[in-house]
Length: 244
Image (spheres, rainbow, N blue to C red):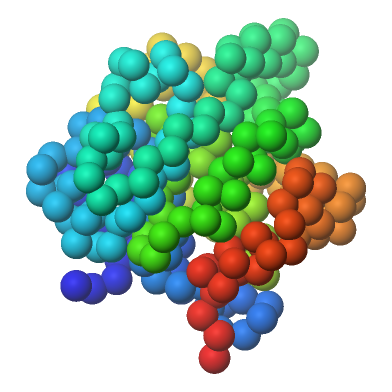
């Protein structure tokens, strides 16, 4: 089977392999090691078979109970798949958004939320990366509902740990909007909400990158700060990076 950037699925729109990025360590990020995704609830049997054939072994669901109850994950009870549900700040998203709307321009809200995740969701981030470090051989997929915000921060941290350039990290983030607007559900959500919240502009994610750099120097130091060991970080880097 070929490697894909955007995986050709029928029931999900923002499912992307994180392979192929040059790293500071030489070589590139591995294909079929990490997949970032949006909601998997509507995957067809063909989609599920494709992902299993693609090497999927671990699924990390970043959604909260209200989301997983409404749209169950098809891999949650599947034999041969290690499923982890590790929510990121889902009980605070609406409060953060509502308070920010009254104070900030819509385009600033996401930047505030991303930095808030980095400062207030440290325990969840530690659990997510610990699950990655302990994952069995095969592809690790992590996802939320849209595959842009909670998923986007985990992708930023993962690529940063792998020594991927700032430009490539930002580009990986900005691609999301162009994919999610193919989803009729997202179009309805955009029409009922603030459209700016669904964009994935570079200026949305740059403050999070600056926060990591200014407060911790680099992503690896940030992940140590949240409680990951050097051994765990090395295991993740070895999974993510293919050396020359």
